[in-house]
Length: 373
Image 1 (cartoon, rainbow, N blue to C red):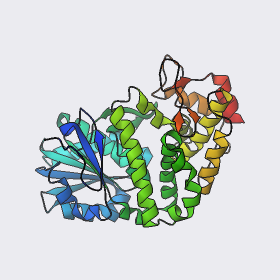
Image 2: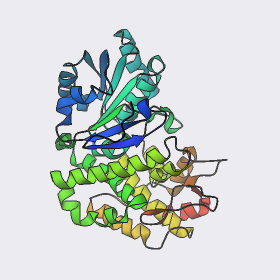
Image 3: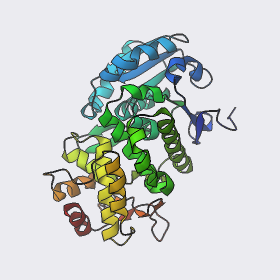
């Protein structure tokens, strides 16, 4: 039976192709300690395959295995940490290991980790025996408020990031803000970039209030951090529920990502995703301003907020505008070899085309000048 409303502490994501028509994002400190009870109603399984990178496995793997084992056999499958390992080779290694253990279609994959793990483990779940149940347990701020929500799974290939994947909604997303205590400061700031993006596309009040909250957010004040997480989850869930398969409005979530992904690729993925998105938002706001689409001063306003959170705001030193522009051509929003951008009219308001579209093609000259400026 489909729940009429999410339980207390949860935000509902509606998705007609998901199990029971949707799933909850459960936000609760200490939730990792009771995964077994949280999964009872939605992801009961004969066995659990917990997939984590080697760093997260060392920090939280034993807790996850211990709690899940109270319900059914659970085993930890690990891979080397880092975006460079979100590949088809790693996918093959993990699926082969699960097959060797004899895990059946009544098993459940639990993605324990950041965005790389969520994407990779989600793709394993989407393809293993033609699809098994998935639960997302994000351990980074970026994954909690963005990557774990929406059912997108993928691996990177030589041609670009996230170009091979599938939509595979989870049964449940379990967000335990307490695990952020072990998150390095740089990764916390990287996650805050996605919170800035949510404010930029949907909530001007949220974004404008961030500089004042920056000291508390960076100090991981539980009340301030948990409220910010929940608000970002609400924004992401509302957009995804409106467009589960990214055929329209969901494209607004890519604000900052076309340039951001290009920067990541040109850097050889040495620029962390959140830092690349921070740069991408300011640069795409500049592009929008130069194209007469975005209100003047938007890029500067975003830069002030990002700087208050300790995030970078410009092109990486030594990286050429031409290299970034060329890398954008592999973006999934490109159509007929024209790169399309999710731009803003102003803070809190995404730009629309005359025919109601959510992405806009911008000529290369405007983009190149904005990147080089």
